[in-house]
Length: 205
Length: 365
Image 1: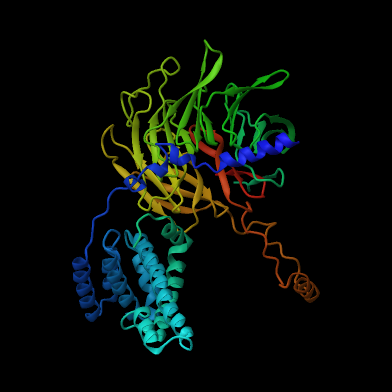
Image 2 (image 1 turned 60 degrees about the horizontal axis):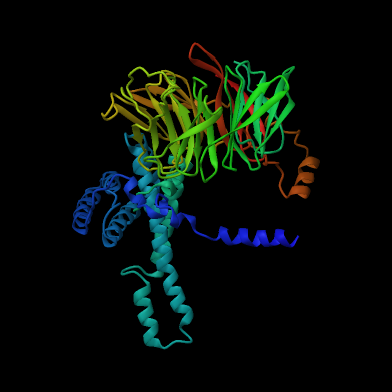
């Protein structure tokens, strides 16, 4: 009986050895990004330029064109600031489209060639938007709960850091409700497959 | 067209299944044993049990002509079961892999079989006369992750494999002395062992769950975890394929696909039902499901009496029992196999599901 126990503990010991680290061919010792073809790099200037174009389309009343425009050039490979800026552009477009126009517009985009790809990109931005506004609304609340125990200068400092420029708590709530209603409508058209693709995809926005 | 033939074998997941050529024997992987069922008056009866592995069996395949059964398991072994008058005799195969074997298929010539594994290799196994033993050669490069599936080209030399590194690849598994030199095809002319004849991935790079060559062998289809199927039409060796068509669907991912003819693919997976795709080199599209929604027997709602409604609400907190799916399979379909074919066109196929379902269904196309 004792031998078996001893063997069992020996067995446990070797189980904790990370054999992947010892194998030169294992995925741990291999840069998995080389498995994919490289993506074109997009910098902040490109994003700003695109933002200007999209705004012009919006002013001209071509909301669908504006949405397509920003979904056709997602920032997959670029600095974090460019990614953030593009998310802002997409959110702006989404907020400027009326709820009654959403479904017909998505339907048209989905029917067009390459449309399902565009909706996949949209889903990625919706989730990124949710993450961003959840982070933004979370921070001020944490700051608010601290108010009684901390000094006033600290509190104002917190709220400046926590909330994003031009976004107060109410507006993040409004932004979230816009994102959620878009999410519902996109899933109606693009199906559960698009959520799966968003999770599977190695190209992150 | 008759309805699907449903066989409920047991309440366990089925990892893989295979029919013998005359469709009288059905081999089903159940935990660490393979159960052999014989068809008796329209239903399957348990006849024999092949016990030899000590971990979950992941693949089973019956060679159509010789009747040999090959099995592979998470215990890193493969066994070849030779039929004899006194029952099946196992022979161990020297796989030389350090991780679980995940998938096994006989080549059309039945002199070789390929075993996919979690060790980033495919073991191509063949019988060596002088040693009287099954030995293997490894296809290694450029696989970077677990092999989930393999499929043979009709010529018995080319092998397609799908992997969790999101690539579907076509290799040559030519073994001197075992294979005859294959005719040149769109995939290549000279094919020494481990020639990579093609390497494909789809846009969003999902894990590949299933690969299949078209009946002619001139096209390759694969299903990946991004709910898509991709069809590749190669032109000539060392040249980009003339068409790579990806169909992103609105459905959940497909786990298995088969070609029913040169212009039709049947795929099934997490949606628990099989779907038809039709097309050619100019384009493919989803043409519908094989499930007929108005089937009698399902949705056979009991007469709605007030008593029954309140009884259900009291028992379950809801008036309707919604624990049954509207599909024949009640869980993910994990393998499709051709059951009967007619001049290269599959007319019937079998599907079986994973999860605690244990259903095997024979569909008519």
